[in-house]
Image 1: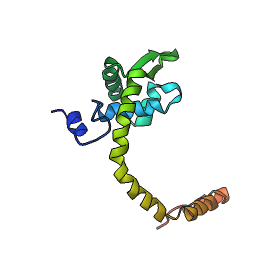
Image 2: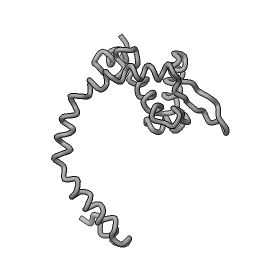
Image 3: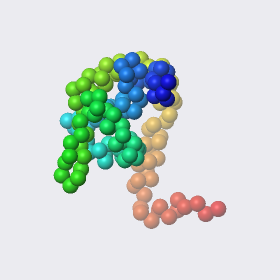
Image 4: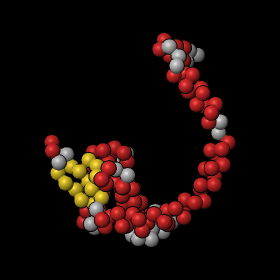
Length: 141
């Protein structure tokens, strides 16, 4: 059994429709882009992936009809989410919501225990300080 298959058996996104975690991540990022399209360079940067990893992933996804790659100007490559990829993402999304539902109550409790107004006030006060005040922030131990 491959590592991707093992991961998908643990209830990660896409497990029920054959999407790997990497497939799901690419489709999710593309679905949030205008027109479902991004330059491959920007897609890789957003995901923190190296060029070769992204290339291999997009090749696999293109062969399965989830995304399309198009050449652009100045050697740019654009990646587009196509209908089959959108359908696969939509099918995977309900299981993702169910999987992450248990985490939402923990996140909500943590968020309510943080003093957001106090943090905001401190950040704003520091932003309004004169530029030379930044020198006083250095550690001189």
